[in-house]
Image 1 (cartoon, rainbow, N blue to C red):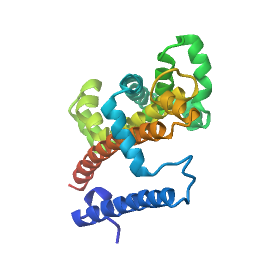
Image 2: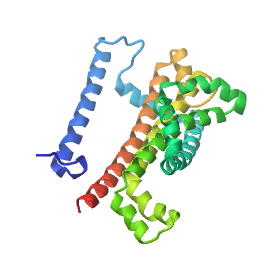
Image 3: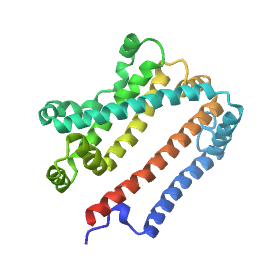
Image 4: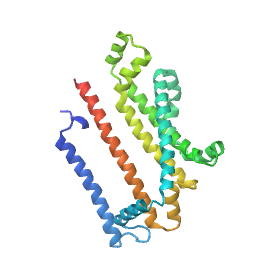
Length: 266
C-alpha cells in the first residue's frame, strides 16, 4: 500500500507532525536555556535564549540598527528579484535548447562545488566598493537554483497538456502562459524559495567578510568586541525574520503541490 503524498495526508496527521516539530524546537531551546544558566555552557561566550530574545526586542525598540537592516534587506531583495527573473528565463532557454543543456549540464552540476565568496574581491574591482558586489554575490548564488528548478518543472509538465496545446494550435507564448507555466508552477515556486534563502546567505556572508555596514557586518563587529547581547540579539532577529519568510513560503508551496496532485488524480 503506497503512502499518500504529504499534501494529501489527513489533517490530524499534518497537525501531529507540526506539533512534533514544535516540540523538538522547544526542547532544544529549553536545553540551551538550562545549559547556559546551570553553567554547562560557558556563560562568557553564550547567553540564555531568553536573554537573546529580550536583547532582540530591545534592539527593535531602540531602532539603532534600522539602517543596517534596511541595507541588508534591500541588497538581498534586489538579488532575489534578479535571480528569479534571469533564472526563470535561463531555465526556459535550457528547456527549449536541449543541445545547450547538454553542454552546460556538467557546469550546472558542479556549480555549487565552487565557493561563490572567492569572487567577491573580483566583484569589488568590477562594480566598485559599494553594495552592488553583495547584490551580485547573492544573484550568482541563487540564479542557478532558480534555473534548475524551473527546468525540472518544465520537464514534468504532463505530455497530454502539450498535445492539447498543439491540437489547439497555440503559439509558443500562449502555450507557455496558459499551460506550461501553470503546470510547472510548484517547481518554479520551489526555485523562488531557494533563491530567497541563497540570496540572504550570500549577502549576509559577504557582509561578514568585507562589508562596512549591514546585518552581517554588525554581527561580526559585535562578536569581535565581545558584545554578546547585541550579537545574539541580531542573530535572533535574523533567524526570526528568515524563519517567518520560510514558513510562509512553505505554506504557499504546499498549497501549490496539493493543487497539482489533485489535478493529476482527477
